[in-house]
Length: 255
Picture 1: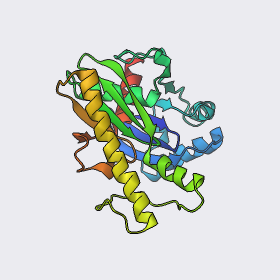
Picture 2: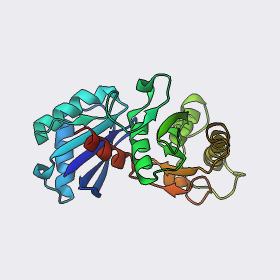
Picture 3: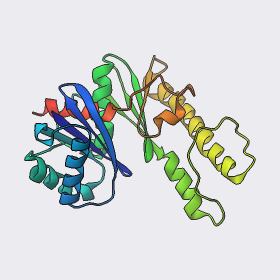
């Protein structure tokens, strides 16, 4: 079995694969932790979900939080006797990365692109990851990673309003039916929700015209907040495990 771990700015998202099928998913906050805290958590979450920790034969990690990398590597070695594979610069990906400096592309975005091009071979793709940041990746049918867009995610937008203003509260992020709010809370929720939808539609339109010159494009969504925008006509498919699938594939390529 393979343990795959995506370390994001807000959460650690993990999963266990039996061959190419995912059989367990879990989340944990991305607070700075010791190797023992991380190791004990990982073994506990596996046991609580009827997965024997000793069955883990390989571990793959992508991380955008460098402060956790050392502790996570040490936890894998100490608690699983496995040297983990980190998806980072120099790894085989099967992609032709067109960034001016390929090292700058986040490992999670690369993992998403690996999985997407594997599942939708020969398609032009826009991949939207609704996480702490909302990211857009443009990948053409020849597996060229053309670049993308990064903007604040919905949680960052709410936190910024709450932290940088004197009277605006922090609010729950929910799907809103009416754009005109009748309270401060409703108004913030509407602005965050419909503002994100508007930004997505504009960016998708511009990416299609600029990167793909009006060709057919498949729009995929992933990330913790992606389900918030189901049935809004933004994307074609929602793939919550995309980053974990990409990690599994990357680890297999680099074995």
